[in-house]
Length: 289
Image 1 (cartoon, rainbow, N blue to C red):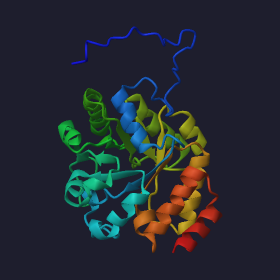
Image 2: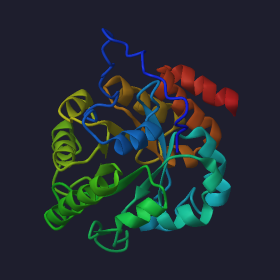
Image 3: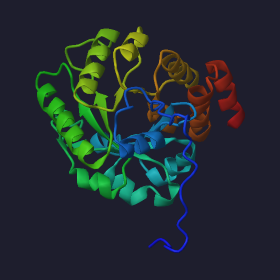
């Protein structure tokens, strides 16, 4: 209880000085609750508005694929260089040091693997994301796939409802539909559908005309790294996406399958946060090697 013996009348009211009410720095996030903004500000650096997410959730559908056979040996040394970690809850509990103090975008849906038809998934209980102190949860959305589109959109919608109840943002991850081309029209449609259904972040692929995809999506977009590319090409991909308006990258194989993963993630970070040109970032990669 406050001391009642020394109650002083207030006098510093700042009359005539309006309270600052600047909008939140992330696209489409100004009207979110404080807790949602707090979690998003852990993922996206407030100084740049960008994020380098390290994705190593591949095992939840692929098993011990190249580069993530031993998370403790290949991924743990990279954590310090990432802004955010993208992984599944089993690996998080078993192998990610809780002392790393990195925000986590938690893979929140599961149910099928590469051995069967993908995307017949269900969403984990949001309370487990709360227990894990997740800064966001990620749900796959298969726009254009007749067999799974409706259920994956429903998964996203339900995940958003659950996330709103506890203040956890949701990232919609666009899968490439079987009957749709990898072009700006498709990714623009898929990204917009995710945002319209409540996603706070969208993860999608870079393509020609990507500035149109970004422009029509009212929330931040991060790009997927996709398959392993030569290092310079991966840095060019990140640079082109950022220049087109992306709010970051969520790279996995282009980092942990590099011959020098720690050097690669630092070079990617320089592109994302410092607008370093790909050639300079590639030189940085070689120097760090």
